[in-house]
Structure formats: C-alpha cells, structure tokens
Length: 111
Ligand SMILES: [Zn+2]
Image 1 (cartoon, rainbow, N blue to C red):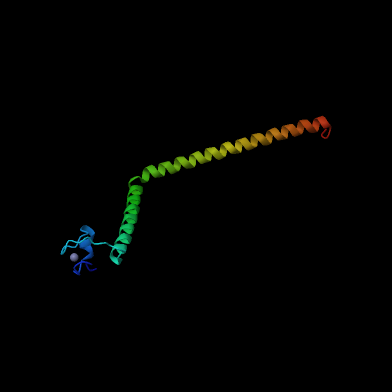
Image 2: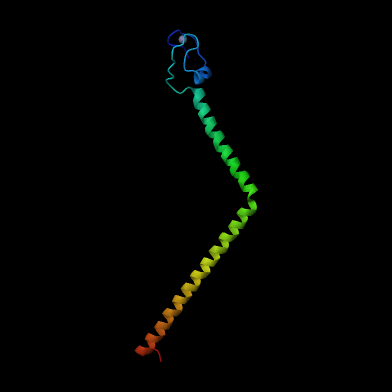
C-alpha cells in the first residue's frame, strides 16, 4: 500500500495502529480488507472456537462426576414420569372397563 500523498510504501501492520502516514502525516484511508486482515479474522474466529471447545472439554472433565450424577437423576425422573403415565393409562383403562361392564349389565348384553 502506498501513501496517496507522498507515495511512501506503507506496511499494513503500521496502518493498523496508526492511520496516518509516518512520512508525511497524511491520514490514510483503508479502503478494503486486505488478505492479511481477512486471514487474521479467520484466525481469530478459529482461535475463539477452539478455545471454547477446549474450555468445554476441560469443564466436562472437571465436572464428570456431577454430569454423571445429573444424567442419572434425569434418567430416574424420566422413569418416574413414564411409570406415572403407565399408572394413569391403566387407571383410565380400568375405569373404562368398569363403565363398560356396568353399561353391558344395564343393557342386558352381558348375563
Ligand atoms: Zn505520506
């Protein structure tokens, strides 16, 4: 990149910190993303992603016992819930059967 005012060659790294030409003092307008900054952005994103993943792995390792306990509790809760639902269904079934028996008796369809 060259300074539009004095034609001095400028380093991208210099422009990141100082947006003025170090030779003539003119303000430099950075018009487009240079490959350096795009690569830098990608590198930054990748670094963030990997550090987050690493944090998660570390967390999982440090809290393995807690996580296992939580999973066990969840399983228990689910089993309790499905037992409850089963009981509820069986209760409804019994009620329907009882009603059917009564109805059949009353209408003389049975006995
Ligand atoms: Zn200049």
